[in-house]
Length: 206
Image (tube, rainbow, N blue to C red):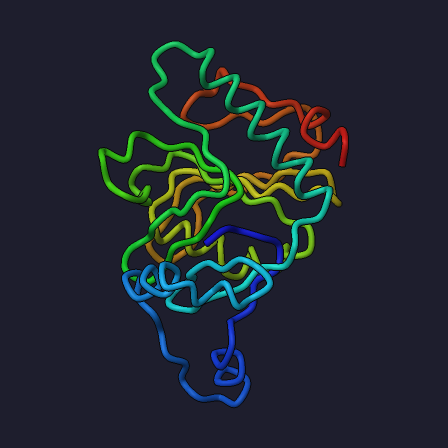
């Protein structure tokens, strides 16, 4: 149940979609039971649940790993150094969204999960996805998914283009009030505008 770069339906779901039949949609509880039973160990990659579909991941590229590490480190240090922020900066953890989605964002910043087994959408103040080979897929699936979940802010970092797309103001229909593309300077999260993450640091090794 970890994130990756490429998402495609696992097993017969892909065939069902291609042939025009309505695919069977899984809920989170069934997905969790399958994971605990070791069913996904038969697949070479990791998996996540997106709107009822079980999607597998391709291996992470070096650029993806480098950028994710820089963002995680930069945000982690900044959050810990900012007084009054009771937040955690997490990487590749399950973020439960309703009954049919459990994406594994590359990074997300969240409040305490209050003893619950999984973090939920209401806990997250920022979600970050690093897109190398999945830019179009992330725009088509993840961008509206996080908006419908009410995530306050989403960053899509694109190492190849050396830019970050910032989405703010989620709407229930899957759109966002604003989208800003940052190509130079730095990026600052909505939850703490005084924090600034330099793009030169983020993409320096990519």
